Length: 215
Image (cartoon, rainbow, N blue to C red; front, side, top):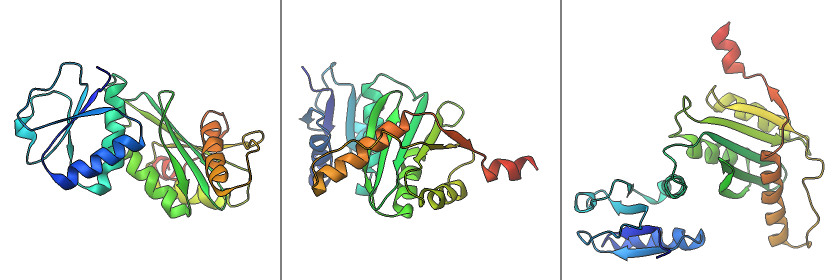
């Protein structure tokens, strides 16, 4: 049995949203009715708040609403990796007209995409790390320096992200590899660059929140 995720719900809207996201992320799944036995091979179960009392599985995750799907599936991926918590989360940012964003948790990409404003980048990062315990998981955000706008992005991130998050500026040299000149290829290129940026070592930006705390 290759399906490691089970959807346990009769809620039509919840099922539709969960299934679409599982398919987008190429995560195989099985569908069960609440109260039905969950196969031992299943590592993560997704259900709703109203139906959770009918599910007997220690790795049961609750679907609440569409806005929380990213966090829900980050938790699914963590469970599938067999981790109680991630040790290190690296977030790579490739600034530009389209801003590439990639989240790498303990060496595996768990989230990627393109943003089209600094605020969208900030919102995405905050949503990703909202439930992270900083005493267990270290978080580093690495920003490429290929375009001047990166400085404004660094300032905005410094202002809004928790003080425990490390900010680094990274050289973009060699991160942008040539691809076909079409919109889809450009979107992929920004994401690929963000992944490479996340894996590089840059120079750390002193956090103003830390300085204010220590002064």
